[in-house]
Image (cartoon, rainbow, N blue to C red; front, side, top):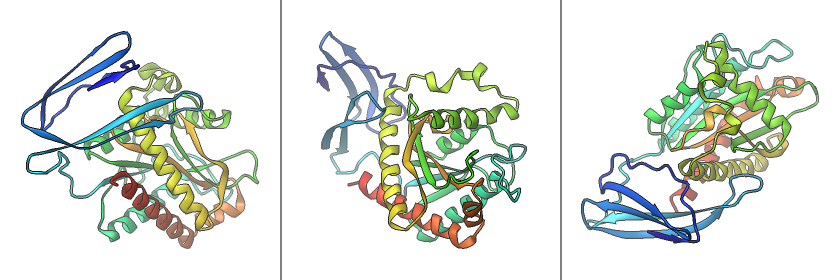
Length: 306
């Protein structure tokens, strides 16, 4: 594959493949070449190129080429999409605390269990949890769990807090090397520092997450994550869920950095708002959110597999 007027920023390495034995690339002043050595004869099934927005200022492009072998079967072997639901915080890390002393870790676990139960009932997906009880799991391990399950979609559930007691509303974050605003950046830094509680200092381990240069594989998943976020926001609006202004936000959350799956971090609402805390503790509202997320999931996979 030759791409004119382009530069190759990829650190791509070929993993296990039914079709290809090796990969190599080269670059000239004005073009990039990617070569895949095939094990057997293949046919190009579908090709699409598009511009994608991954940050507030930069522009990127991607090309997706779907292949099939002579029998007409694609390389994909999954029968159902895999979803991993991450209940934020847990154990010694309580997260945000509401006015009635309810802890974020308990809210996120309750919502994760309910969402899994509802998605399982639809029998369209394979659904897993990063935790099903009150225990502390380092952020990197949460991502590792999802990658071991070969997840197509990673949903991390959280509840927010603010010094402004009247602030309320659902919001959703996707990864960016630039935060959409100062509030998003502060929230990402606060969540990332949760690992320090378990004895892991993120700064010494991997540096400031906001300064990481995202590789090409991550850029692809960042676009997929944004598509899911946009679909979910539409559903939330249509179902009368309280949403925060500028609902879709960008930040460098540690749990969103996996390069091979769409990943979002959902802030269900604000525990520091009395009315919203009361809503979030309600089983009726919990099921309302679960149904809305499930509908967003359905629309996302429908759009992804068109």
